[in-house]
Length: 350
Length: 267
Image (cartoon, rainbow over all chains, first blue to last red; front, side):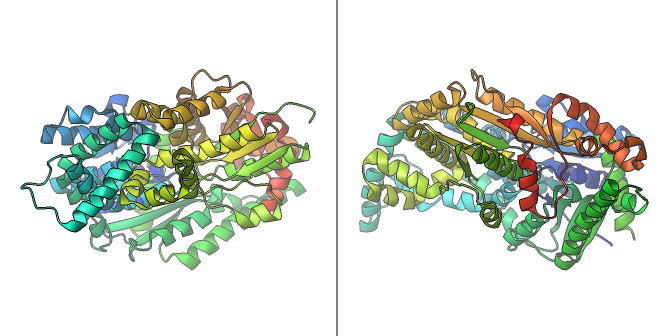
């Protein structure tokens, strides 16, 4: 199976199927073929850090990983980056000279790893890296499960975020964000009265400080809207066959076939023909060579074969491109990456 | 009831480690002990068929309805609340801050527990975000809201969670190094997000082959290499953590039923 070279490769799947390990292996395989690769992980779990021995202060920074780490030539390498919403936000603050505004408790809270801005910031970061145009391929390790849909819909959030009702609120509060004072028409006034009511209710529930700080925070983000809006183009690009490859990762161990199907369904508006199902941790080759003598083990073998057959059956019914990777029993994650990369190279050069 | 149980049990962990199976088995276990227990699937698609086959006692909440009820109560008007929830402003607020919704859900569950002192809730909560946003949110929101009705409610919730014998959190993991190190990270984050609590989270190792072979008195030397390697990697893990055996059963319902008999340690 030949996999065409694309600007972006996305790895999706539920947590714990080995998504980050498989994505890292893909980056290694591409690097071994001489491609210039950037691996970005958006998973807030710090798996990549453990695999590649990265340091805590490496978040949001591009690290060059030379391949001697895996026992290959030191001259070859790939770049890797752990997504950090805070680092991306900081870069925006520097460019827009908004340091003071970004010190707000609200922005700081939202940009924590589980704070809610992770997906949007990730899209902005990926778009920035794409704009640099120095990589053949950016390999993206997306957040697990449903969070991956959040990631894709990040740009929808951007649209809602800059929805007209926000502008109304700023105008009502006398914040000048649009150049030139347009005369308010009847409808705007109506909306504003609604906004006024809304804000007073909100103050009751959340306290007046929150409303004030929230508005300031939103305003600061609004001043960075060009970053957000540019990131919107990313969502459109993802749908293009010429731009992306999709890898849905599933694992025999976890019986999570249905989730792979769910993700495929939910991502239907983004997915195109170039998508691949990765069946990770297959036991097939091991089971074939096993001839158990007693009853318990015979039953165990049969149930393991049954489980794997069910996944195989599901895979061939729902996916035209399937990559099968056998289970690796080794304590070192580096060995896993190395062996998976080897399997990638073998299966994609057939 | 022969012994005192905790009021709220949270089962969390990465996708595919068996949280839902264990949370359901645990609910069935408590039910068999005569406890007034309810299972809640939090903000996930419920496993309707499985719940029905198991005749699982459940408590169901919907995030947006929950928020509407909450705001309605605060403002003494459900009409205004439903109007507020429909505005772009609020919808965006909810989308931007997922933790807000999760917290309102948790608030609702805690309220139910406070109303009925015999009730025990088993919460099946995915780790990727939810369980963490839920706990992180409560301290985050205190930091950002500062005053207002929400902060009072957050403090009430935190008081409940920190109350003696109220909360028990189980972080479920598979018996592999990779899964275990992720579960350990999660456990650490949960513990830092709920400091001053007696009830620190436990790691529960699920689907252990080592345990399965012990249970069935299988001679390890008769195993093929790939399984020997597997249980070699499991040995250290199983020694130091509460571990559940791999279960052989032809349907998810039967797996849950089978696991019910290993649940005592988790109470």
